[in-house]
Each structure stands twice: as C-alpha cells, then as structure tokens.
Length: 423
Ligand code: AMP
Ligand code: GLY
Image (cartoon, rainbow, N blue to C red; front, top):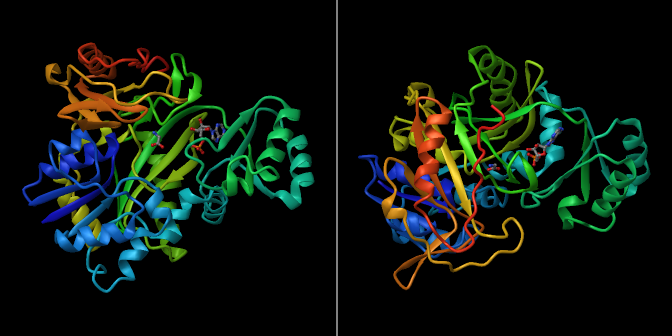
C-alpha cells in the first residue's frame, strides 16, 4: 500500500523508517520531510496544514493511509477534513478528529476531561480577562511555585512556573490582558505544582481498544543538570528505569483505561497515538498533559524498540481491531541524544553543512532539522539530528550514542552530555 507521513522532524523519520521496513509498504511519501526521510521515502514539498495540497497528493499518488506526525493539523481538523470529503473519506487517517485533539489543543478541555473521568491530575482553576481579580485571589490562596498555563497551543512555551507571587500575578495579567501568547492565552489554567520525576507513556488506540507502547523520559532543558530554557527535547531514554511493573499497573488502571473509556463515553472518536505526560508524585502517577501525537525525541527511542510490523499495527488501529494485535517490544534500553544548532532554543542560523553521519556505526541517525541543498546535507532547524543506540542499560546505550555523536560535525553544534544524570 501507499502511505503518507505528515511532518518533518526526527519523530517522522523514525515512524517513516519503521513503515519503510514493512512488506506491506509499496510507496512511502513524507510531506514535507527532511534529508533523512529523503533517503528512505519520497519527500513532497507540501506543508502539514495545507489540506488542499494534501488532498491533491493523496489522490494523485493513490495514498491508502495517512499518518499525522505533529499536533497542528490534528487540532486544525485534518481528520475531519478527510471524513467530510467524498473522495478522501475512505482513506484512513492515524490521528484523532478535531474534537478529541482538543485534549492537546486546550488545557482547560483536558483538565475538564480528567475531572469528569476521575483521572489523577493537579487541581486547577481557569480564568479569563474578565476574571483576572479572581485569578489574583486564587494565586494568593496557593503556595509557590505557581503554575500558569496558556489554554491553547503556544509552541511549547505556554507553561510558566514561577516562585514569586507578584511575578505570577504580573504574568497572569500579561497572558490574559496583554495576550502574551496571542489567543492561546485568552484563557489561563492555574494549577497545583506537582513535585516529582517526569515520564511519558504512549498509547495506541482504535477508539475502543488500546495498547501501551514503551515508556520514555525526555530531557527538555537546553542546559546540563536540567537548567536553562525549555526545548522540544534534547534526548530520551526508553524504558524509564523507575517505571516498574507495579507503577505501570497504576498507570494503566488509573489513567490509560479511564482515558480510552472516557473518550468513548464522551463520544470523541480517536484513532491514533495518545502521549500522556506523567509525573510520579510519591509512588503515584499524575497526568501533567495529554498530547495527541507521539513525542519528539521520544519516538526516536520508542519506535526502534517496536519489533512488530508498524503498518499492521496502524491498519488495526484504523480498522478497530487493535485487540487482535500482539505488540512485540525489544527488551533492551534505547537512548537518543539530540544535536542542536548553536543558539537554540533562541535564534540560530540555518544552512550549516553536516558531516560525519556516514561514519556512525551501530546506532541509528534520525534527522530532524536537516535538508539537502546543492547535494549537501545542511542544518534547517533548531533540533538537527538524533543518534539512537541500544544497550543492556541506559548507560551502555548512551555511551554508544555519545561515541557516535563525536563523529558528527556542523558549525555551532551542541548536545547535552549528561543525559540520565537524574536516574
Ligand atoms: P506542559 O506543556 O503541560 O507539558 O508543561 C511543560 C512542563 O512544565 C512539564 O513538562 C513540566 O515539567 C512542567 N509542569 C507542568 N505542569 C506542572 C505542574 N502542575 N507541576 C509541576 N510541573 C509542571
Ligand atoms: N518531547 C516532548 C514533546 O514531544 O512534546
């Protein structure tokens, strides 16, 4: 069959690689893709939110299945667009419809969903410009640190964690009244601060059944020791060593099951990946956030551990037969280390030539912000590439990723050398 993957990150490279290895795949397209996907699929210069151009592509290339990588097109309703189009409605889309994509698109919606279905999460209240004074009073009733979240999508920047009450009040005003994050902060969720260690759980669902993929932990801060600005993710480890069988049982019973059942009860059709951001408080998991897609760079460690045919799994999701699939997972640990452009996550330059990828041995190189220009592979984004390795434990796997990373060069290249420091 012909398959289209939408997106251009390391996540999409990792998904495309697994799809390309399936005997069921005839032609594989990635739109827009990167230099890594260009080597295993046909890149098409179409943006993920250009639904009209995606329609043309699906029809002209006879695409049989679409896998949506990032959240944006899902929140914008790409799945609904397919279902409402006579020519597209028979083409399955992996990714939820717009109504359920609000689990990521609106923090308030996600909180209400969790409250409705008794899913453990931080207690919260939400405010608008009209209720600014009530927001101040609520902040005064809390202990620091204060957690302020823009309701809508804010490119990963919409969460503020502040120690000082006056600063928290000022930021609340700036979000609600001065539109700090545009329309995304017209509503702000203020929630209880949860103290613990984070991990992510990935779930596949066909809307009725579910399968749990391996857990992963990513490293979000730019600086070593988890310091400095937030990034999309500087590396990841799977499985998470502290997520033992007992803890996983709690995650499944208290969070995964009620989430999938809740979607069904609320009549929110969902065929796709659910990324549940969790925090371990004491011995108990609580939900920090839902994402309606896979994580990046978590996918670069989760997908390589999946031994089952990904296309068979995706088809079972689309057909509602996920209960008939038995996921096979590699027991080893996988780690990935992300190399980024100098300056990221603030301003950085693009177009730096990348060398050394051909010298990498015993690891996988997943491209993120790269492209082919005049026959050369050059940087084209903040996060540039990720090197994934296997080991008997995370230390062994990381050693391999770091050894190979030393072979890669581009001007301004930076990566964190302390992943796993907290485990
Ligand atoms: P989010 O965009 O909701 O994932 O939040 C970004 C980051 O903020 C998370 O990965 C956590 O590190 C942190 N965070 C969010 N909510 C809380 C909370 N209630 N308590 C503590 N940390 C939080
Ligand atoms: N690595 C975090 C994310 O994909 O949102």
